[in-house]
Image: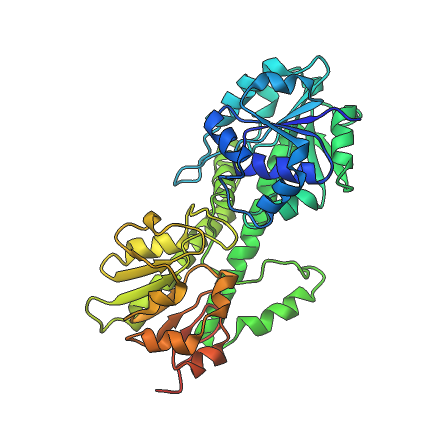
Length: 425
């Protein structure tokens, strides 16, 4: 029987990693210094919202020992530091929480156990840790909010930073990673740390290019939904390319890596102008819904709006850099009703939080779909329209079919296509 793996820090990253690893058959010691958090998790109260996570815990929790006592980590073959790293409004990371967990668990390393930094840290962080380098590793995490458990269970590859990439991995780490059946790419610490930034910069490039061209398509009478399939069939771009237009980059992770890349380039004397352009494009697209609102309600005094969605994306309760909250800050002069399936309306002070999505339309001049939750697809648009005072549907992500919006008698505004005026006029 293999020795257990320790997961230290049970916020989003650590909790999803612990539960997903148990689902793959690993024995896990899941540690967090917050005893109240541990007690809540043991009763099934999870601090994060992720599809399938609660069910996976119910099914595989028998292989996880949750504890607030770091002494229980001494029997682990490896301890993964998996605390989430917060960012400020400028995308700068604060690694204080990582250092605190490292300090708490390092004294509990067994004589042959390894320490693995799974938390995202800047290049150079791992190498300076006071841990013997032959027992110190950093692993790149590539979780996606709303798909985190899926990503834990089915990784494309593992990227592992090592002091000496040519040396075999310790048996405990090799056995653990072997459960997932994917390639393990070993490289020096700094390469692994930069690999995460590189992944997100290239994703940001795709998002920014898509949003730029989709907005242009709407302005010149083209339809981005007609163009995207042609791009996916180009082998140089591919079927999984980020080609869905949206409201810029949100959530914190991509913003952090853009900021880190720019900071490192400044320090190294290299050019990062293209990275700065991605960030600027994101700021521009974040204001798209507000620009449409101003254009369509210019003649209204004290307009009323209904906002569907507060989370920054479906499948999560995170509101970090949420386009919806940014819109509501710009629309302070509007009377706003809001709904989200998982995020409480209290995150948007001064708004009217409603219990059911169709209620946001009551007396509204415009309804805006700011988070494309699947739950909203089932809305009866005709019934929604009867509740409204105005005729405007602002649907950046094209959650609704334009013909259906037209049939409901609403004007449809979406990124990547010219506005569709309803046949009512």
